[in-house]
Image (tube, rainbow, N blue to C red; front, side):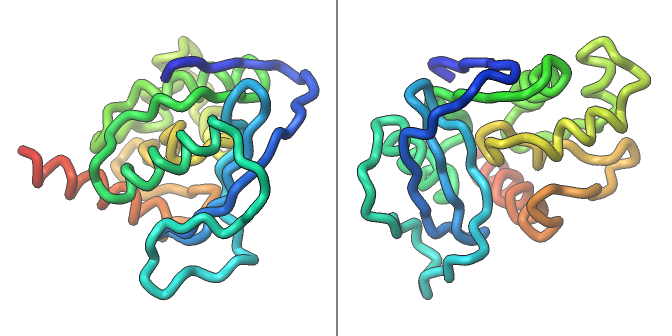
Length: 179
């Protein structure tokens, strides 16, 4: 990541947004003047027939949005393992510590909520880690899909288990192909 702006309860001014069609559905990417502030599923927009990433909005787009769309397109093509787009993430100090820990999980790997709780020096906070994981506003770039249950089980995901499975399989397949 080139830059991450971590903010606690300050007002975020949205600069613009774009919707892109991806293999996991339409994603709405939102940016502020400081970076990408959210990437969330947009269930109101239908997928394109070929599931190719395609910009669906025609509003003015910032440089952050251009970079994010390019990087997401490359990620879904299996050609990107680490994002560099600037982020503007708003959350509590605890949420931010969890999101920082998530960003340290290597592409193609997984980590349990318990492991993350230990990593942030809150060993008894695995449920709170799960809640912070679910509040992650920048899905995929902050890889909350890489967090799983302690026994390796597929646990809840704010955007649905089908999306989580798909993202983990994409990364697993990309890693095995390059090995």
